[in-house]
Amino acid sequence: SQGKQVYLTKKQTVVCQTPSRRAEYSDDFEICDDVPDIAELEPASPNADIICTEYHIVYSTTYCVPVLYFNAYFSDGSFLSRNDLEQLVFSKIHVEALRTNSLIQQGAISQHDHPILGQPFFYVHPCDTSALMAQLQIEDELSYIISWLSFFGPPVGLYIDPIYVQKN
Image (cartoon, rainbow, N blue to C red; front, side, top):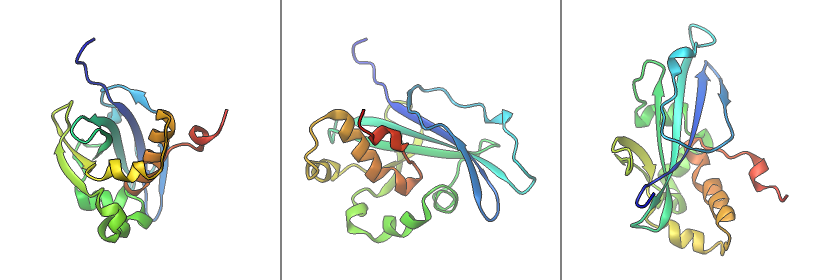
């Protein structure tokens, strides 16, 4: 239908335990907008906490690039703060880079209303994404998305399955 906006989403559920965490999640992206029923999940132990993270890829008509939106919440429905995200969701090796690396600073993390859902989401700011991706000189759309996800996903805990980068 004309004018309908869609986005890709990936949801993952992580059972956090001390000192490590065990993740159970799907490696596939879907086009959808439903909210998972995390009430059915149970922590593996009384000291564990369940975190559900949603990642959305939304095309920005302003910047003409994809934008990575994300939110994470505990099993009781309360959302994780930025500090909680850094401690429990973000890749530990990328947390410092998110604060100090000039290449990644252009992708600073902010919070804003999701352009389709109208709810607050964190997102990786897209201001210099176009210039960065132009340096890669990628022509086909799938390779562009895979490269873009490979760069912007890991710092915020989003990894793509290596099967997506294999040649058929």
